[in-house]
Length: 217
Picture (cartoon, rainbow, N blue to C red):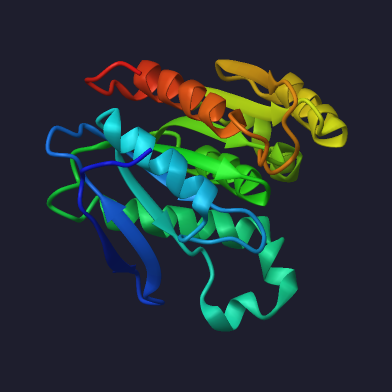
């Protein structure tokens, strides 16, 4: 799946976090991606999702939550408060850019990025309007879960039993509008044929419903 929208590199904040921004002409919403451990703005799976979201009329921002130096310390990869703070930095940055400042914001988190997205959503309830987590670790959001106000969609692979259980437990603690989707035959990384397309369909549906994207999935 490809999008005709131009995607260009940008730098965010004083740390100059590397990111890829794509804004369709008629976009009224922006989805910021929070990648999992060992992944970043060039993730093929998240870029696949991002292209589909742009085709559905949403702007996308894929960014590296850590600098190259920070990535060398594995502890940073699992530092959820740090990753969440970087998402807030990106959200603040988007609010200052002419082409994105008027857009409603949602987060798409994968793996540990799912936990970071929920912590950031809890910290900025007036600015984050929807969250989608793919194979995420919402349990890592811990005490922040009951504070999340953004409608939250949890997507988990049917073959990823430990993460299914973690998501079910987190679901019980979330007080916002929630939904859990288990994708049959998918593993943790959704590498199986067709499984990422199912993720795309649900993400489009959720963001369309809760961010108000003009074009239906």
